[in-house]
Amino acid sequence: MTANTESLNKPEALRSLKWEENALLMLDQRLLPEETVFLRLTTPEQVWEGIRELKVRGAPAIGISAAYGVVLGVLQFAGNTRELAAEAIKQAEYLATSRPTAVNLFWALDRMKARATALAAEGASTSEAIDALLEEAKRIHSEDEETNRLIGEHALTLFEDGMGVLTHCNAGGLATSKYGTALAPFYLALEEGIRLKVFADETRPVLQGARLTAFELQQAGVDVTLICDNMAGHVMSKGWVQAVIVGTDRVAANGDVANKIGTYGVAVLAKAHNIPFYVACPLSTIDLSTPTGDDIPIEERHPDEVSRGFGKRTAPEGVAIYNPAFDVTPNELVTAIITEKGIVRAPYSDSLKKLFSAE
Ligand code: MRU
Image 1 (cartoon, helix red, strand yellow):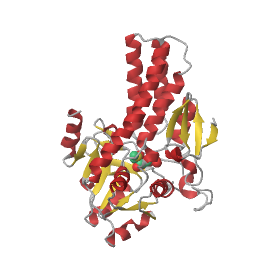
Image 2 (tube, rainbow, N blue to C red):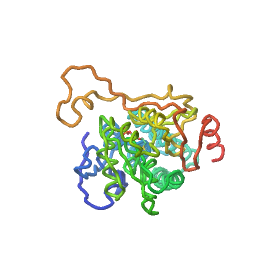
Image 3 (cartoon, helix red, strand yellow):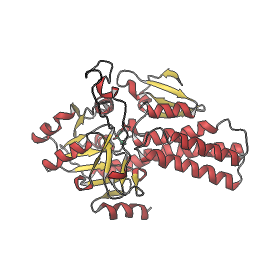
Image 4 (tube, rainbow, N blue to C red):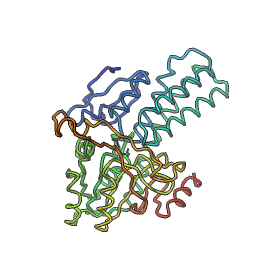
C-alpha cells in the first residue's frame, strides 16, 4: 500500500516521527540525505510496511511507530471496549511481524496490549479507550526523548574534551524520538562546549552511518568524519580513537549485544587497540527473557541490498549472497552499558538484573 507523501522543509524535519491530525507522519529515511519527505500514514499496514522497508528504522523509533500503528488500527473502531481491546491486540500481533531483532518493537506493542486490556477491564467507553491508547503511544514517544537525554548525560561522563570517538550505524535522533542513544552524548557535548571528534562508519550495506549519522551530526554542527567500514582498524591504529560507542537492538540477559552488522568487528578491533567499547540503550532494549546472544533472532534481508543497494549492480547476477542485518557482540568485549538509570559493567547477568529491580 502506498502512502501520501508530503515534503516538509522545516528545521524540525529531522524528527523521525510526528503524530498529526489522526495520522503518523514518518520521515522516509531511505531518501536521506538527499530528500526530506514525510509519509502520511493512516493504517497499520502502512506502518508495518514502513518498518519492514526501513522507511523508519532504529530500535526505539520502530517501537514508537508500531505503538501509533495500533492506534491507527482502532481509531475508527465502533464496537464495545472489549472488542476494541481484542482488535488492538490483533493489530499489535500483526505489527510484531514487521522485523524480528529489535526488542523495543515487542516492548512497545506489549505496552499497548496491556493498556488496551486494562481499559476493557476498567469499563472505559470506546471513545475513552481510543483516546487513552493514543495517549499511551504519545507517552512511549515522549518518554523516549527524556530517556535519551539521561543516557547522553551518563555517557558524557565517560568522555573528555579532545577525545576521538567512533560509532557504527545510526543510533541518533533519527533512530529515536530525539538525541538518540549512542549519539546523545555528542549533542550534549556540543551544548556544553566539550570538543569530541566523531568517526562515523559508513555501515554497509544500507549505509545508515553515511546517509544518516554523518547527516544528522553534520546538520547539528558536531565534528564528524565519515569513514568506510574497512577503515576503522586503520583509524584506531593511528591513535585517533579513544572510545567506541554504539546503540543496540537487543541486549541479552548475559550482556551479549545485538547491533547493526559490523558492530562485532568494531568491538574486536577496539579490544585489539585497547580502546573501550561502550553500548548505549534504554532499559526497553534490555531483554532479560533472552538468555544469551545466541537466542536473539537475527534478521536476514534481501540480497539486493548487497548486490545493487542504490541502483547500480555491484556484484555479478546470480552470485550467492548472505545478508544478515545484525550481529552479536559477546559481553566480554563490552566495556560498559549506558542506560537512563546509569552505567553498568560486567558481570552483566547481575548488573542488568539490578537495573530492573531498582525500577
Ligand atoms: O536496521 P536498522 O537501521 O534498524 O538498525 C539500527 C541499528 O542497528 C541501531 O544501531 C540500533 O537500532 C540502535 S538505535 C538507537
